[in-house]
Image (cartoon, rainbow, N blue to C red; front, side):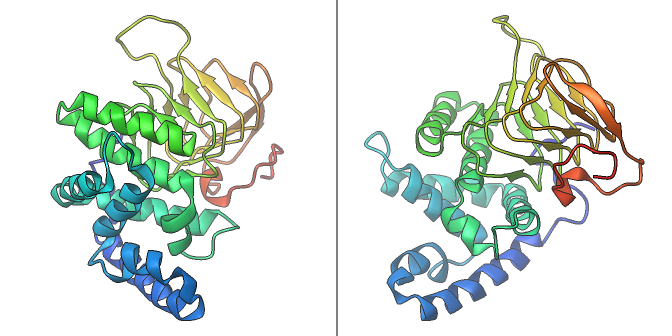
Length: 277
């Protein structure tokens, strides 16, 4: 099934409230331990009433430019997220994914404040909602600023599911017709790109749920990365990848297979390419 970001997966509803409670508690403790951070902690978390508001503030602080200042960006993002609570649920799932899969992350406050992979993905989610409303130029403005600020370029028409870990993020590129399903982990300098200049049609990859794509991997054309597959770092994928398999090389070749009931590579984050990974 192709997952649209505004269509939540079963069982995720209400996650935003849980994540918000965790965030607020951690922020309160952080404000006591590190008073020099009180300004940003209060502005982004402690003076806010929910995750959507907090994300709106954080993105506005990061994305504000002469083209559009914080005083315009913050209410715009807040209004969009208020009208699309399922997108806030997706953002909560993204935060939870970072905490559970990134060994360098200790709590959800860290990615909300500081991780540009999460910031870029959240910016894409706002731009995608604008794109769906037909506000294409404004969506492209968000894409452009995100590319400048975070070094991440995701076309707002791409379809990205929930529970995504965009680790580091630098150099990550996603084309217009790409599809990424739920619970996928992607490292820096991954490209989900096309193979030519033809316009229209489905010309970018499909990444199914549970996939792990290593740093620097390039997936080109309308190829499908099957469920719970693994793409090794720096590989170039030009053809479909079977579910529960590992591919590596240039061009990528299948190097290992896993049992269909083995845990998702995206969740365990084991990047070795042997069959025991």
